[in-house]
Image 1 (cartoon, rainbow, N blue to C red):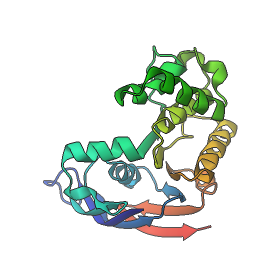
Image 2: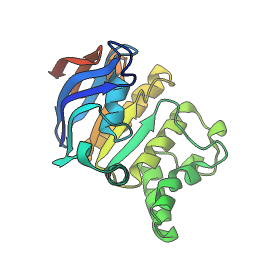
Image 3: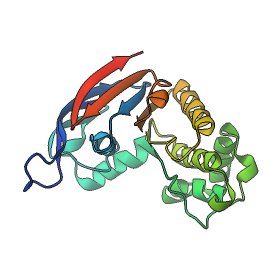
Image 4: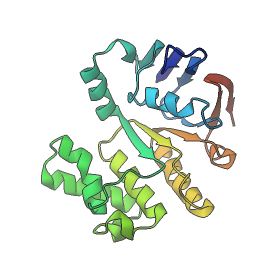
Length: 224
């Protein structure tokens, strides 16, 4: 379970009213499919980065499965992130000169997973996401939808509990975006907690719950 209590984030304390987040409080249960919405500059990506242990709060408390992340040392926070959280980004963040297989393999190399086990896991995720046909292609030779599915596969190979997606459909056409959201729904149905940051209400409508952020504050929290 994710529990954020009065999370505040200030990037420049010398500038008045520079709070990216202003006492934001959110609870997300295991297995939920949630959209975080808000206009540009609202603080939604900052919130996602704090949930994903990529950034730290200036004030407030963040509990992840009962563990107070705000009290951990940086190396311990990094360990939690690697074990429990996967990321998917708008621009895919793939290595340009690595094949799809090699991009997906990277997190497993970091964890020193044996070659035979890496192969099994990668092929399983590629089959699951329908991208076996691009196994040996570099990103430039793939469509946007294929690149995003490779990015999702890379996020899933470590068997993380939480998948965070920052504008996952932002660089895609509408039909391809719907296809990507369909895969995120399937991942959620398999028991993963999926959190999507978006400015698109149609994308948010494909989730089960929408949290709206404005000027760093949670202004709405609605369940479909």
